[in-house]
Amino acid sequence: MIICNKDPHQKVAGKGIELLEKNGTTVSSGVLEKEGEWVNRRFFKTHRDNLPYVILKWAENQNGLMDSLREDSETGINWITKPETKTLVHQWRSEEDAILVGANTVLNDSPMLNLRLADGKNPLRVVIDPNHRIPSNHEFWKLKTPTLVISRSVRTINSWTEVKALDKNDTLINQTLKILAEMNILSVIIEGGAHTLNSFIKENAWDEARILTGKNNWTKGLKSPSIKGFLVDSFDLNTDQVRIIKRDLTK
Ligand SMILES: NC(=O)c1ccc[n+]([C@@H]2O[C@H](COP(=O)([O-])OP(=O)(O)OC[C@H]3O[C@@H](n4cnc5c(N)ncnc54)[C@H](OP(=O)(O)O)[C@@H]3O)[C@@H](O)[C@H]2O)c1
Image (cartoon, rainbow, N blue to C red; front, side, top):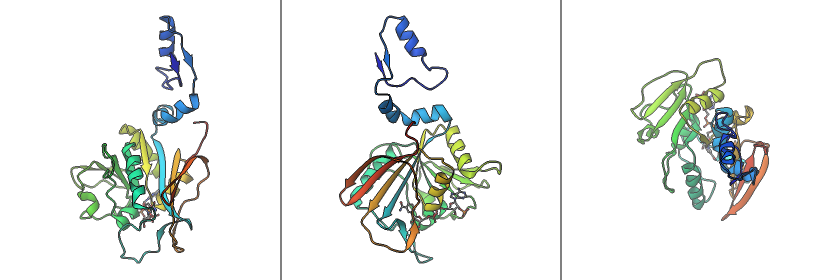
C-alpha cells in the first residue's frame, strides 16, 4: 500500500497505517507527499486550522487595474478578460463550497455568483455587507440559491438568504471564516473587490491566489491588490494570462 500523506486529524493520524501493518500489509508512506498535500489541500487546511481553504481571485489589466474609473451611477461588470476565460472561472467556482464578495461589488457589478458555464452545485454565495447597504429590492437577492450575508445586525431578506451578525471582539475576516467553518464550508473563493481582497491579504488569511491578466489598456481605475507569495503555475489562455500563487510552500 502506498500512501502520500497521513491524515492530519488527531483521531486518525497514523492509526490506519498501524492497522494495515498489523494485518500484514506493507505500507510505504510519504510517497509524492508534496503532490498529495496539494490535491487534498482543502481537507488538510480544515483539519489543521479548523478554517476553510481561502482562494483569492481577481482579474487585472496590464496596468494593474481591476476596474475602470466609474461614473457614480454606472453599474455592470467592466470585463477585463476574454469571454472564454469565464468558463475557467466557472469551473473554479464549481470546485469550492463558497464564493464571497464585498458589498461594493454587488452594488456596482450585480454579479450572480452562480455556475452557468460549468456543471456542479452552486457554491454558497457570501457577501460582506456590514451596514446593509445592498437594498432589499436589489437583483442580487432574486436568484434562489443559498446566500449568506455577514453584517453588523440581523435582518430578514428572503427564505434562501441567511444573515449572520458580527460581534466586536474579533476581526471581520476572522469571524467570517469561523462562521463558514461552523457551516462545514471547506473552501471559499474570494472574487473581489479590492477592499475585500486586501482585507484577506492584510490578515494573512489566504492560502492561494489566482490572478487573471487581460490585455486591456485602462490607465485610470481601481488598483488591484499587491500580493507576495510563491508562483506555482502560470499559463496563457488566448490573450489572457493566468498565475497561481501560494502563500506558504510548506502547506
Ligand atoms: N477585476 C475583478 O476581478 C473584480 C472583481 C470584483 C469586483 N471588481 C470591482 O471592484 C469594485 C468594488 O471593489 P471595492 O474595493 O470598492 O469594494 P468591495 O471589496 O467589493 O466591497 C467593499 C465593502 O465591503 C465591506 N467590507 C469588505 N471587507 C470588509 C472588511 N474586512 N471589514 C469591513 N467591511 C468590509 C465594506 O462595506 P461598508 O463600507 O458598508 O462597511 C466595504 O466598503 C467594483 O467596481 C467591481 O467592478 C473587480
